[in-house]
Amino acid sequence: MKRVITYGTFDLFHQGHLNLLTRAKKLGDYLIVGVTTEHFDEARGKVNVIDSTLERIENVRKTGLADEIIIEDHEGQKIEDIQKYHIDIFTVGSDWVGTFDYLNNFCKVIYLERTPDISSTMLRKSRFRIINVGIVGTGRMAPRFLAEDKYVSGIHIVCAYNPERESGDAFRQKYDLPVYSEDYEEFLENIDAVYIASPNETHYGYAKRALLAGRHVLSENPIALSKRDMEELYAIADEKSLVLLEGIKTAYCPGFQQLLNTVQSGKIGEVRDVEACFTRLADPEARERTDADYGGAFLEYAAYTLLPIFKLLGTHYKDIKIDSILDEKGLDLYTKIQLIYEQGMATAKCGVGVKSEGQLVVAGTEGYILAESPWWLTKKYEVRYEDPSVIDVFEPRFQGDGLRYEISEFASKINGLERAAYKLTKEEIMAISEITEHFMKMRMEQRNQ
Ligand code: CTP
Image 1: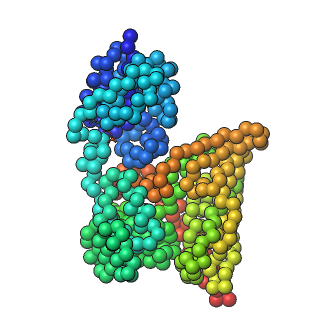
Image 2: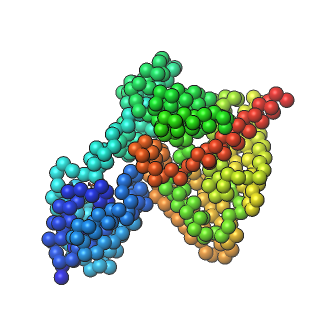
Image 3: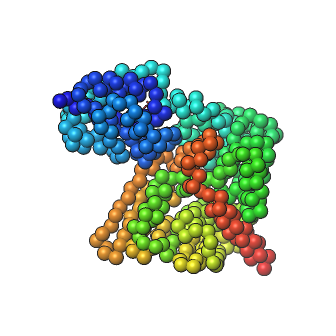
C-alpha cells in the first residue's frame, strides 16, 4: 500500500485545493492531509487566515479524499510525520518547488502542478475590499507601519499627513507617498481609515475628526488623555459603526495571548501579584524627555505595563497609588503604579530616564510566570514552581516588530470579523484612560506646588 502525505492551510477552500487533493490521492492508496493550526500559521507570518482550524479540517474532510487528517503545528513536524506514518510520497503544489527537496532523504517528493489563477490570498482580497489607509504623522512609527503592513493583505497605504511641511516633504521623497500638510479633511477624503502616529497630545483631535468624517481609526496610545474624551470617541465610533482601535501592540502579539492562556488554564494556581516593568533610556533630546506636558515615562509605557495587570486581575481594583520621579521640568523620568485588589496586588513600572530590569512576573498560588525583556513582544516565557529544577519554557514565534498583528486585528475588525475583539476590550481601555486622567491631574498638581 502506497502512503501519500500533503500539507496546507486550506483557507477559504477552493478549486486549487480540490485539484491538488484529487491528484495527491491518485499518487497512492492512502492519503494523509496535514492541516495547519492557527498558531502555526501565525508563526509562519500568515496572520490573516480567515477560516478556523476546525472549519478548514471540515472542508478537507468533506472532499472525501483524505483517508486521515492530521494537524500540523510545528516546524520540523513533516520529517516526524513521514517516519511515524510510514510515508512513501510527500506532495505539495508546484509553488513549493525546491523547498521540500530535503525530504527526499525520507521518502519520494513530488511537486504537483498548481492550478492557475486561484489562491486563498486572492479570495481573501476579493472577499474584502481593500482598505485604503492614511498615516497621520511621519515620525518614527510611520516607516515601521509601512514596512509591516505588507504582511497583512487587504491594507493599502495611500497617503500621509503632517502639518509640518518640511518633515512631510522629506517623507514624501523617501517613501514616494503623497503627503498632505494643510487640509486634514481633504486628506481624509482619500481614505477609509487612519493610522495615527503623531505626538501624544494630538491623537484625540485627529481621531475625533477622522471618526466624524466616517473613517476607522487605529491610533498609537494614548488615544485620549481623559476618560471623558475616550468615552466620547467610543460613542462616535459606535454611532457610526466604525472601528476604534488603540495601538497597544502587546495585546495583539500571539505570544502574549499564549501567556494569558497559560495563566488562565490554572498552571500557576490563582494569580495574586503581577509586576510589569518597561523602561528605556530615551535620548535626552527626544520628545519623551523634553516635552514636560506630553512626554515622560507614564504616557510612553504605562499602557503596556497596565495591560497584563488588567488582563490577569481585572479592572476592578480597590486602591491605586502612583509615584513619579520628576526632572526639573516636571517630566516623569520614572513612574511606579501600585494597585490593590480584593485578592491580589500589582505594580507597573515605567521609565524614560531610569533603567531597570524589563520583566513581567505573574505570581500565583502554585507557581509563577517569568517573562524577561522584551516581554511586551512575548517571545519567551517560563513557568516556574516551588521545585526550582522544574521549569516549563514557552517560546512562541514572533514575526517582525509586532505591528503586523495589530494591523491584522484592525483589518479583521473593519471587515466585520469580530473574532479577536477580546484581545483588548473597551473596559480595559477605559480603565487605562481613567488612570491616565488621574496621572495627568496629579502631575499638574505636583508641578503647581
Ligand atoms: N494549491 C494548488 N493550486 C492553487 C492553490 C494551492 O495546487 N491554485 C496547493 C498548494 O500548492 C498546496 C495546497 O494547495 O500544496 C494548499 O495550499 P495553501 O497554501 O493552503 O493554499 P493557497 O491558495 O496557496 O494559500 P495562500 O494564498 O494563503 O498561500
